[in-house]
Length: 173
Image (tube, rainbow, N blue to C red; front, top):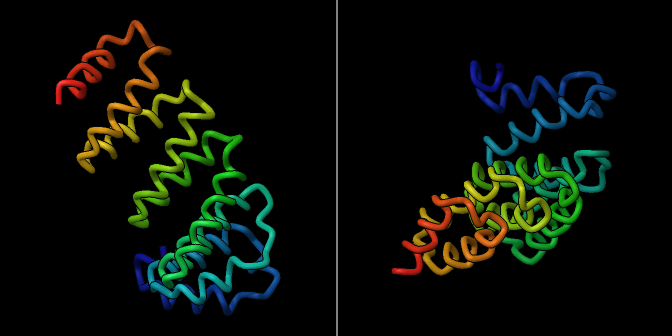
């Protein structure tokens, strides 16, 4: 609430004034990283997430590292961190959903698409991933990508008339 009521810098200063043991609390770490993102403090964000262990949220730590590196123009390091995040998240559809959502909020469309494609590849029954990727490809005007996606998922859903119709429409373009 402090981020919204005051501003991210005041919230971050307050969080930093807490006893050191509270900084290891994962909720506190996430709020601090949210403040750093709002402030566009990429060096601070990178320092906050490097060389730490976030346990089950390790995938998200690497996603944050990727964002910071991308924002600092360190594209190769950013891609490597994103790939590590995808690898760590790839066994949990909710982790992939969180990555896709975060990448979308951060304006990282290729990373969002990669997370959605990973979700579809690993969990083809997850309709949300297909719907979100379809919407993203449509928004991007990526007809070829839509054709590939719909052609890939249609055989697994032969009774889905809407899907068949969408594929037919894309093939006519």
